[in-house]
Image 1 (cartoon, rainbow, N blue to C red):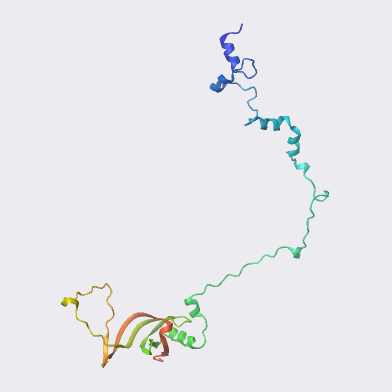
Image 2: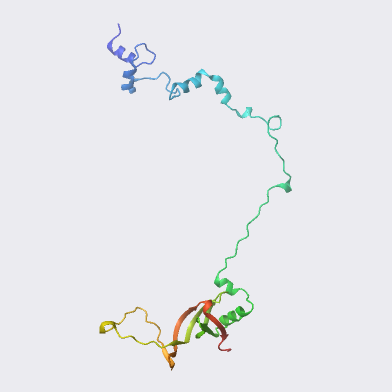
Length: 225
């Protein structure tokens, strides 16, 4: 008769008739596999395709010696052989030159723009006449720092002279005193040169000024030194 220990061991033996799968699942450490290196399958279909249908395995297996040769196979697609001069041509995309206001000013100019460039290089003062809707507003005498083809001008050390209508100061509302306005940047001081009737001629000095091309009426050289 078998002892209790032998019966217990036989319940964990896969080859025994007394194998108990429930105990084997509860105590997998006591189960001894007859072949530990055996492959594992997730389901029975994989096992059937692996061992019960060996012909499919041989069809899928491809060895290096069983590769078809392109020269001897009749079903292989023809391969076109190119001559040396028919190969792909390597080309390099030309690099596009970066162009901006500064590079355009360095390019050789023609016509009136060449005069502007000459004044900018020689640091000669220019006189720019500006206009408004009805006519000439005034003029600016300054050094030319930059320009473009649209006649937008960047000026330095500007002395601006213009004519404007006289402003009548309105009395404060409800008789209250006007509060002084505090500004971080003080505007340039305006000097009245001449007053005639309803109009007055003013002048001010500005360090830097940008004049739009649509406001430029005429540009001429102020000094030819």
